[in-house]
Image 1 (spheres, rainbow, N blue to C red):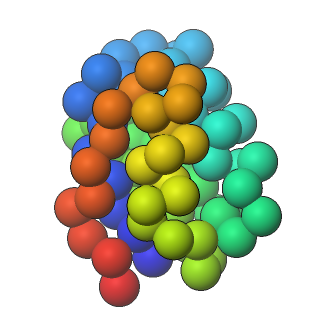
Image 2 (cartoon, rainbow, N blue to C red):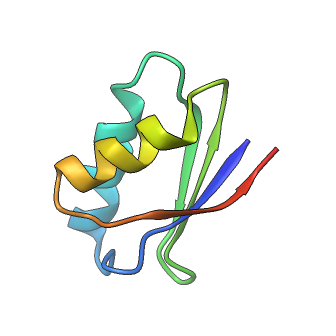
Amino acid sequence: MTLLSVPDMSCGHCKASVEAALAALPDARGVAVDLATRQVRVAGPAAPEALVKALEGIGFPARVIADT
């Protein structure tokens, strides 16, 4: 599980864009977006760097908070 901080995420459209970008990655499963905390939880073996790159590719800077 990887937990990401996505501080620029602020609305339902942002949430949908983030979910779609991460769901498109083959190893990202169980994407859960929390707009209140501006955090995203991703299950599966996706590399944290790939998650951050995917989000930055759609204009959402992100950083890894936890990777277990």
